[in-house]
Image 1 (cartoon, helix red, strand yellow):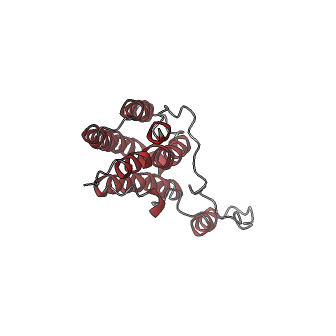
Image 2 (cartoon, rainbow, N blue to C red):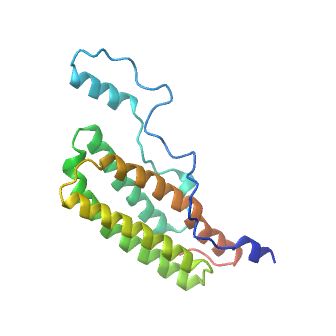
Image 3 (cartoon, helix red, strand yellow):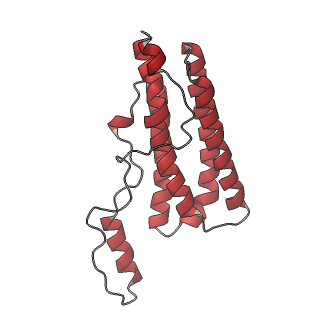
Length: 187
């Protein structure tokens, strides 16, 4: 009975994203910078003030080394876009970065789904739908960027912020919890 309640599956149609995700702004906001046209100074102030947007945190670890390593790489790809945006090169790296994300996310999702099949995870179909939705969204963004739409870096960053951390905390943590309660050891 406890397991039936614990493993009630849903598609998480509206994910609640954790407050631990950084918003990209330091809590005090940006210091006042005179509007004197000193663009380089304003950029430097922004670099000094803005915290890393997408940061791996120990709370994201699910205890499965391969999956945790792949999650770290997804965070690193998202942080690469963030750094390019801070350097004024977001549009320049967007097409390549989305291509890498589409490819790597596909590989990662395949590994996760293989693990879920191996352990008999009861929420596999719902988890697969989440992966498919993410892959579809990334592919659509990749097509838009490849077609020359360069004004979407913020949209991509917001999606990555929400999806990576939200999916790990809402869905992937369930895999580790299921393994623990069913007496299976992560490999």
